[in-house]
Length: 192
Image (cartoon, rainbow, N blue to C red):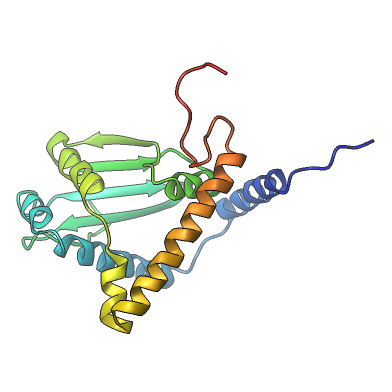
């Protein structure tokens, strides 16, 4: 008698298949540039909510960071105002950040668990330290932004629902990821 397969293993295989298609698929250049502009707007919105982040970036003005994942890349230049802008493709970046996780599903699991993905960093050490500080300390306060649009009570309700969905996703990941607890956190040590 054949053992039924877990729906999670099926999802994993589907994600791996989609991952192969991702390598063959390319978006139109205009769409990529528009998506990158939107990412820059979001990054700057988050940076502007933390004055120390802007001060740290001002010290790095003119520097270029190249972030890569699979065949996708994005060049960001730090402005004199301590914000980001898209950089020209010419020239050598001051800092190269390559996300090592190639599977979109693994990357999503890492993000849902609240962890940083595995990355390889090459280039300027001080700039890398500033970017790492931002990754550790900056958080987008979605609830506050929603409150400006829809009011405090609906924003709080939506945020509570979002946290519930995230907690449920972490619980599911805890069952899917070998060696993870119910919160989706990898277990330490080798004991049973």
